[in-house]
Length: 247
Image (cartoon, rainbow, N blue to C red; front, side, top):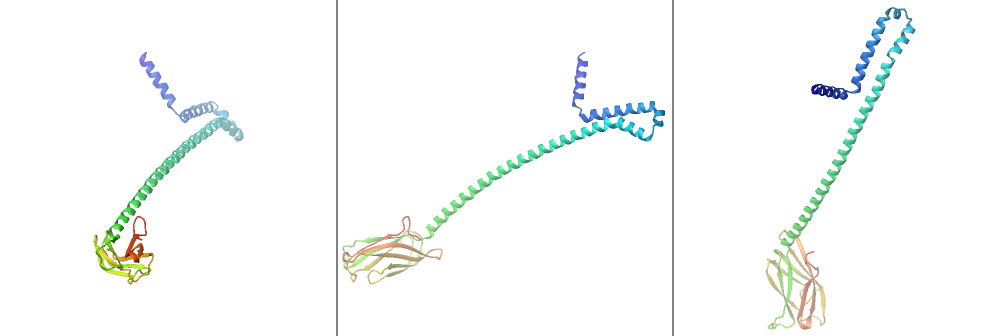
């Protein structure tokens, strides 16, 4: 009994798994077989039919089969259209996911480029600082100076090597408006004596430029402002650019 139930269940599953076309094919074969059997039994009467009557008979006999397969054709076309629509929808979803993934990758690449650009700019600034001279002026309050009217200052290079150093005052201060040194190496200090003895009393202000050739063989300059008081033999020079004197 158990084996019978198993066989019956397997057979029922097999019939359920068959497509509509399979049933239609077998039904069509059985139907045509029945038609042939009927035509064989009525063969004498069939030969006696006129052509138009024979055509009507055949149309009536095979019309249901044609209609059946026409309907099945529409059903098959509908299934194919559904499969095609599902495939297109899956492709659209895959394309959307691909676009989103590409957007994420592009955004990550852009951030990486921006980060690399920032790092490059920082490295460039660091290199610029390393190859640029960095000058500082200090007033020397030399009480033992036997030359009244002389303001003595130190210029120190805290940056890179500087060749052909020109110190220019605009407007000129004292008898000399320009000082020249063949070089100022890193951490080297030079003394500048500014003769104010022949300068009219009163506070004097102007610009001081330090022009030089850097280690990269390019001409560079640093800008400062100066204040001098001739009657006190005093002068002070400070940077014009906050955060650095390179421009």
